[in-house]
Image (cartoon, helix red, strand yellow):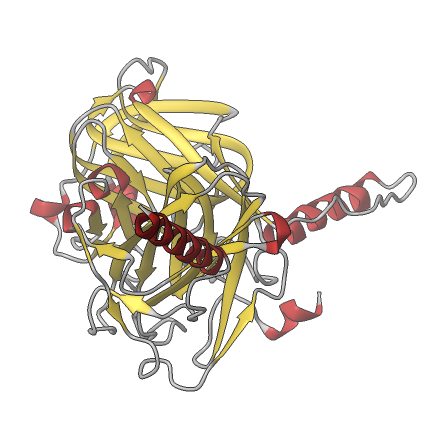
Amino acid sequence: MKKILLAGVILGLFGCVWLVIYLRGGDGQKPKWIWYSDELTKENDYAIFKKKIWILPGAKKIKIKLTGNSLYQAYWNGEYVYSGPVPNRKNLIFYDEIGIDKFKIGLNELKVLVYNPSVPENNHPMIKSGFWGEVKITYPLSWHQKYETDRSWKVGRNDEGFGMNQRFRVHDSLAFQQWFNLAKLKQTGFSSPTVIDGYVFGDYKMLKRPIPLLNQQLIKLKPKSIKCGRGRLIDMDDDYKKGTDVTEVIKQSRLKFTKDCGRADFYLLDMGKMMIGYPRFKFGFNTHKLFLVYGENTDKDGYLIVDYPIKQADAVFDVVKGDVFESMNRRAFRYLLIVNQGGFSLDQLSLDFIQVSYPVNDFSGFEILNNKRLNKVYQVAKLTLKNAMQDVYEDCPQREKTQFLGDALV
C-alpha cells in the first residue's frame, strides 16, 4: 500500500513539473518554417495549415504570431481573424501579432490558408513558399503555453477548392487572378508538414510588424443602387482562344439595362464609395461560368467602364449551390458588375466583404471660407489619402497597389 502511495506521489510531482514546463512553453523551441513539401517555387502554390489548441481554465489572453510567403488568411474556430503579412523581403521577414478575443476553454482550432503566386514578373520577384507561426496563451502568475509551427501541425491541399482563371486573363498576367472555394476547402485531407527551416531562407532577420495592424472587418455589401439587364454573353470557349481578357468579354457582349430585376443576366451594383478589401460570395445556385468585374466609373449611359490600363476581374467556373468564392487578392472598386449567362436573382448570391483600412482617426478639419470648390478638392484629397493608406502609402489601391518613392513622402 505504501509503495502504491509513494508511486502516486512521484507521479503527481512529475505531472506538476510537466504541467509547469508545458504552461511555460514546453521545450522552448523556436517556431520552424513549414510547407507541404520541399518543392518551394511552384507558381500559384498554396497550402492549408491547422493546429488543435487546448486552452486550460484561467487563460487570460491569447496572441498569435503569423507570417508566410507571401499571403495568408487566418481563422480561429472557423471565424475570420486576419490577412497579412506586411510584404517580406529576401532576408527581412515580418510577422503579425494578433490578439484573440473569443476563445473557449478546451479544444480550439487555428487554421491558416497560405497562398504564394511566385510569379517573377510585374515587379513580383520569385519568392519561396513557407509558413511560420506561434500561439501563446497566458495564464495567471505569468505562466504561459505555446504552440510553435513544427511537424506536429497539419497541412493539406484540395485542388477542388482552388481555381485559376486559366482560360481567361486580366491585363497581362494570371498572377493574383485566383480564387478559393472555402466550402470545398473544408473537405481537405491533412497530414504532417515538411520542416524547411534553415536551408530555405538562409541568413534572415525576423521582426515584428513595424506598423499597427490594419482594421479588417467582415461585412455585408450594401449597394446604394442596383441596375440590372439582359444580354448574350459571348462564349469564350467557342469564340476566343485561351488567355483572352475577361473584360473583353464584357465589352463585346450585348448587355442592355432593363427595368425588371426579377431574374437578370447581369447586375451593376453601385456602392456609393470606394470599397477596399477581399470579396467573399456564397452561391445559392448552380452555374457553369460567372464573371465579376470591378470598376471605378461608368459611362454616360451608366455602363461600367472597363478600359483601365490595369483591370480587375474574376472568373469562376462550375459553381455548385453552397460554394463560397473568395479572392485573396485585394480589390478596390465602387462599382461591381456580376454577369452570369442564363440569368439569376441577386438574392441568390450572398455578398460578403472583408473591408480593409488603416487604423487612423479622421483627419483634422480644414475649411476655406467662401470657397466651396477648394473645400471639395480637399475632401477628395483626404478620401484618396485614406484609401491609399494600407501597409504602406500606395500609389493607388486599385492599380499597382505598391509604394513608389514619392508616396513615402506624403
